[in-house]
Length: 495
Image (cartoon, rainbow, N blue to C red; front, side, top):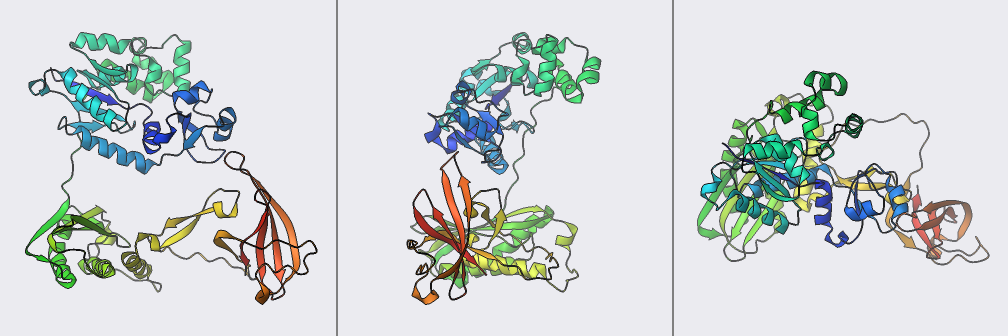
């Protein structure tokens, strides 16, 4: 019979967080959906559970139970990158690997025929577990005959489990508890009130009644447990990258000649992307130097494109920013990464509006190519009680359409410093004689406030008294007194 294995990395987001922060392993740790007091706790480790911190709590309530709690959010793109890296890693042990689409951290592996390469399937699974533990994961592996059976056993047991006969797998699957299978809590509790707590008890229920009382999700789980939806491993098919390599008979160090070589290789790369109906979002240019190793440069157009002139212009700007190569180039590698192209992106001619947003985005792409990806950013609002924490800088990929609002009166704008600037002490007889900006700006003639901002008890206590101070010269300063540090600071100015 064909053999199959399931690799389960329980609480996958929590494992990723602990790999990112190994210094947190001795503390209670939680994964939250957002790093703020009202954030929801999603996953916790055993130390946190021992402090009565459970998924579903608010971050602020969890901190009240454990002041030494360590918590952070795990973005979805980080999870996706980790899953893709694990698929590649598991591909060293079998050519067919399938990640679960709805449960990150679960993988099915085709184990058929591997007995000829290893002493036993137990030894093969042990090698996988050792490799994953070396990467600081905590895996559970079950080797058996069916998709659902290996999944349920891997979820119910720790370490490596090898089932020698289908009957053994069936018996172990029936004894697997339902609360380990990711069932919705409300459904799980309703089944528990009926005395259904194992897979075997669920399988014994009539499928028609399950669909009527609990919905299609539990019906699908029932069909999987009975083998009605058992499928072989559906492996991911790695896509061949759109890549061109060029070797130089004589090592090259002249930048203009390298640009000509890149231009020759760029056409085949874009042609491969076009055959897949994709447009380039990134162009990776790799250099292998004669004695100093490898170097990689990345250019990103403002929007997906197949225009070689535009991409070559960005490459030229990036190479000109380097000024001089550290060594002579012996090999050149060009890799194009793309996304599915829309009809508008593939269209040769298109109507241009009076304000050419595409041209503006291309200009920003030129700035990024010449000065680096962090040169073009925009302010993004976020929840924060302090002015400097109420926004963050996010990369600006493209220019959007302007949406002006009608406003008959002028609006004052507060300009913030990146970091508050310290000010001299405020004299007792104020405002006369207080020169926060020096003699050139004159003394303060009028003060409005204070406006108190306090909080931060969940991280670091903050107490600030904000004022608007008008100087003799007419400038309006936004300042505050920090009671924790007993100093005055300027947060910004109002214009």
